[in-house]
Length: 176
Image (cartoon, rainbow, N blue to C red):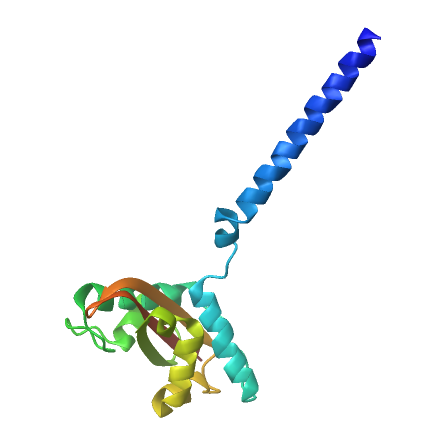
């Protein structure tokens, strides 16, 4: 009988531990872990770009981490120095940024760049793609059949008096 009581207590202890573990997993899944599982904004924008391209019969773009680094540096620079332009105050252009990324080394290439900024819901990927598609020069870049690669950068913070702004840069490239 002592042996049965021991086994019963062990089962209760194991069951209690399992139930506590499940409760903890449920709490984590509905808090921080769920946030970590969300899609990064740059990937949301790539998905939106490819969705727009598909709707117009254009092949999807492939993301490039090298181009993404160049695009992110440009977004960070615009945010840090409070300007909104394809050419930085120090004269850095999209051509310069892409050449220095190394992505086009040994290739002939063509590039295009789209930039955007917004705050609140206007900073979302869906709002950004909507704005770009309404702008003829941006639309031409987004839907160009020539581009095969894109790097997307987004940086958020205080920008031109807006505390919750995000600045986007998308660098599009065709290598031959």
